[in-house]
Image (cartoon, rainbow, N blue to C red; front, side):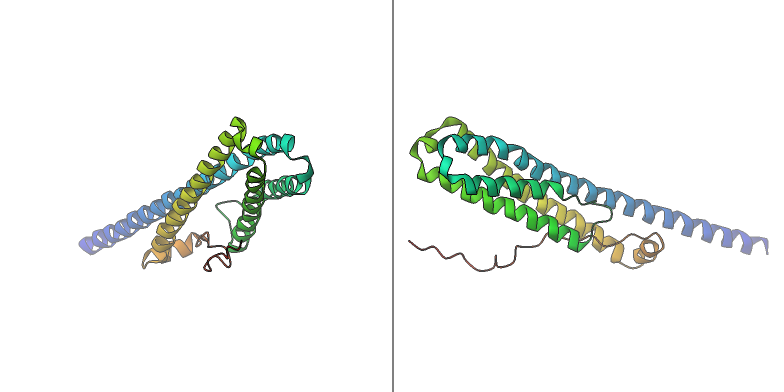
Length: 193
């Protein structure tokens, strides 16, 4: 009887240690997703911080392009007003965030296109430097979005595997959404002259 009690206590101890280890792994992976999300937000914030400088530079050359400048400013304001909590984000929240950021990207594209119409602006050192920084920032955004999706995939896979899913269900670890391609991006854009 004594031996059976020791075996039962040992088995329970092993299960408890196993559960704690799984829980701690899930917490670490969830923090990895949160960190990756923070990096995405930082990259978007860098872009938002560059926009006022770019708008000010263009404004001096293109007074009659005020609609485009206003669109960029409004898109930036909308995008920076949307906040998503990495720990409780939903697919809908992420989609709204992504749509706002896509509007900023579109408005910036129109703003950069203005530079093509103004040779003096195209040659302006500030404009060229800001344009280069924006290009680098867009690359960072893509890298951070990919890193976020990889962290979310690793976390989602881990919490959905059996027997991890048992602990995940007991501790309310929920699946994280992914960044998705913009609607219509599967079609090549038409270029007409």
